[in-house]
Image 1 (tube, helix red, strand yellow):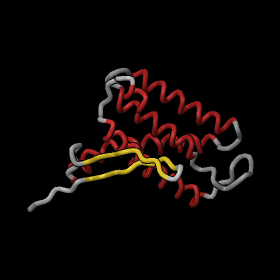
Image 2 (image 1 turned 135 degrees about the horizontal axis):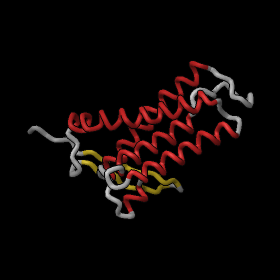
Image 3 (image 1 turned 90 degrees about the vertical axis):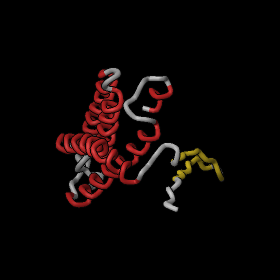
Image 4 (image 1 turned 30 degrees about the vertical axis):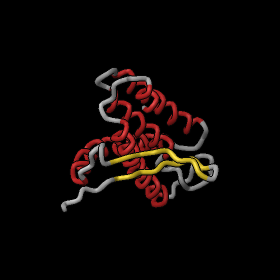
Length: 160
């Protein structure tokens, strides 16, 4: 998504909004997938662990594919199709490598897509509720002690 932004492909949202929605989607998807893995305690096909259901890799891939679809479908639906092709390949490879059952991959795909759709539904309301404005919010990269990172700053409005 960021590569397309840098290449000048017109997205639906600003890079700042995209970043916020990536974070929200990742949190939603990770919480659901992690909790379900613990709750279902399903053995992987290869017998390596009891974390088979649902597929986290597939959830992440389909969440990203749906985000590409949401951001760029007005410009070209083929961008979303390409994202879904890569996400489908991810799920197929998880099964091929004996890490997941079909139901794990299908559930992961569903949770990934739903996480992104929910994010696009709630983010505008959350942004309005918090009064976020691009002039009050700043993201900057950082490098310290051989570690890459980023700093988020938000300037709260004063009623004085």
